[in-house]
Length: 450
Image (tube, rainbow, N blue to C red; front, side, top):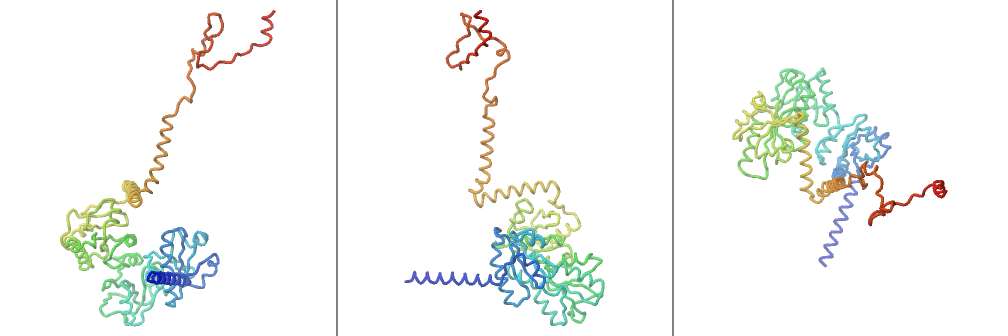
């Protein structure tokens, strides 16, 4: 009886799960060739996928949850998916080069999503891009609400000006990453001090920074650099994104599962430097910590001992390492200042030699990872071709190079056949192939008779 009840419960759970999946799928539309002509009246969030793609299959349940949540929120954004292999022409028009590709289509504009593939991050992206490019902040209460909700956001303060036009241009390019607002000077909190108007500010890390055209250069480049918090938990994807900022990335490489004093202390040291020396370093440096050294080892093509601090220049693959263990925040500050003044030599880079080294390292890493994950598959992939090549080489080496013919010297060809004592040709020996007698011409035989 107990076994039957348990089986019934499992069947009910399985049925409920299937119904839930079907319910979620109902809010994601399967798109076909008609989508190209019918889409412009609506805002669409589309997943371009390939049926054979493993990453696409992993995204599918998340995508179904996105569709359900957007429907519950009453969002104007419609959620769909398109098989880019079946409708490759449409996918090519939207610039799809890999799978899965997530795009928000708004009129004639197409925005690429490049963030983490989680439900909340995708929904946040859709909400940000589908709304107004520049959102007004009409009151101090609204400003405070935005400050509490967003970790990083930009605000233009002032009236119409050339700076505002540059701000709008930058927002149209970078709306996929962050929020853009506008406000009057009366709305801004009292602790904000502005030397001149109009101005562009970024609010993050419980403080703010004012754009200075003389020191910061192009406005769009400055926004791209400042769109991250000053201290981050870094992973491979985020490190790739930080490469677009042009900043050096100072990372404490630690093992978060290791509760030893050294790992905890080094993380605290880099957090202290990021906080207390923000004004000095925030234009040139991004700070953070990374759990584990696997990804860093791939970048450095070396085995990095942890815990340690490494400074990366992701734009040219250079890196800086201190030749001793960092004991205090002052040690790290001196190390960073030495990098800025050029007294610390950079390692790595993207020279031809380094690129060749990278190719060899990547090939070695791929082979090792294959054998570690699946030894049998590794033996099949690499052993079978090597075996075939070995057999071919042996066959070529062991083959009869003369083609099976017997070599006969020129003198042997020119000398007559030995005659026996009776004047006739010698009989063939045992083992020789008998040579058939050639009949004499008829006229010659008749002359002999005469």
